[in-house]
Length: 355
Image (cartoon, rainbow, N blue to C red; front, side, top):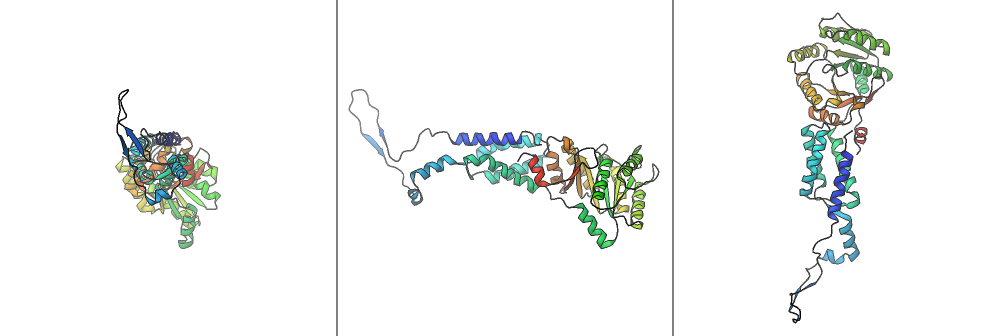
């Protein structure tokens, strides 16, 4: 993930420390003599004595070796230097699918952390990496534990916890819904699936296939029926049978199709979900950010799941989408099998970036 980020930071650090170790062209002496030039055979001319500058008390107390070691071992990154390398780093972030406002924020905060700060030369690379790691961890929103949320509602209200899943066509939404159901089941949470995608051919059969494989019941109606009524009936069934969680799979719809988004609003109004999750592909970059923003504006999403994280070589989508819509990423899809879904972990994500 984040191709070439580690190499870029290393190269940047090496350039900075190399430039700082260049010898001064005109080294200062404590006292120097300048002799006016003379022709061969002429008598020496008057010498001009340039007195050494006065030393402060602090400088007087430092030994010669302390002063030498300080000059050799410490560097300070200037504004000018940062502007050159910071622009290169921003370009690299953008190339790795980091949204522009997120890249701007990272560079701005990094500048505040390292410019005009003294670092040991041997530690410049680590200081830049550590600063970048802290900034990225702060940008990522801390995810919550879904099982805890479900248990909390069940204990308080004795009602099922309702989750609505939304996203565009082809993002792996239905498979992801099944993965979440299987994950909840493995953690002791009973669940039921609602086939509220009543438009796409074979969508109901697909969800029923998953339900049979993981041992979870599916509530469905005929194709062309009202999706909101499917969700409503699933909730009613869950209440009657003391099922803890209802997962509603909706039809994939383009984020630009306003009439379909209005239909989603109706499902939300009728089913009153406790959690609305946007499912997007991590490999689509800024498209996923734009899609999540559109769904958030229409129905107010609460969390995000990103699929195909196992083949995402860049990682910028994971960093950007949550920050832009101000919602946490709950899970990453890491393969086709039901168990290949993992809870999003900020520290683990940053480690994958090579920081």
